[in-house]
Image 1 (cartoon, rainbow, N blue to C red):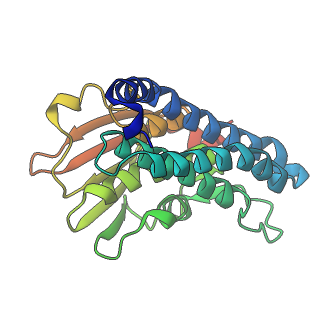
Image 2 (cartoon, rainbow, N blue to C red):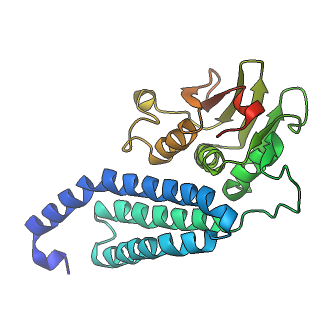
Image 3 (cartoon, rainbow, N blue to C red):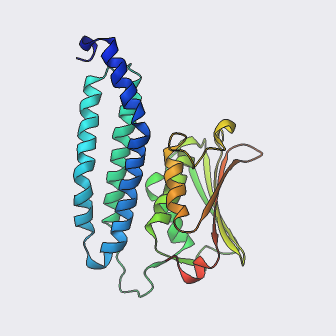
Length: 254
């Protein structure tokens, strides 16, 4: 159909579509943040299902639109990759909403909203594991149960984005290493993949166009008081450090 409209119209459509790429990513970030914020406000009322339903409608519209575009645009068109990205990211948001509406039961424990580092890591990695990549979790001095932090969906989904990125590029192994002292708590997520392209290192987490997943992770985790540093290990592979002030693990993130 598009071929019949002529190359000029196709070029115009392509320019407009690519021009909206950053806006689409920003919209997905907004939808994610709305979902996370809505969980915090409505969890006490038991209304997460209503929140998921409310956001599910526009996400369904995005998914249907992406499907229709994929049928109209030729498979070898440069737009096909962007359309596939749009469909994949809308599905990712849908999965996040599904997870939010299935928050684990508290079982009557008054401290249910404080997670050990072990539980926090397991929750963040749960949906991003690969059968051909080993996830190694290392804790400083103990099994990760002595240090706890208040349940916060931004942390789970932010760390999840970083683990997902590491899993995507790893060859055989992803490592999540927790360390802490009196001043800070740090988690380093590393992989044995090719590492971050040197030309992108200065832009990672800052630009929607560089790596949308890393941008979303930095935005979510930054909102909890964390700072992020991106780099490459001397022996190869990417590294991301996430550092929180130690007091947040004593008082709980507000």
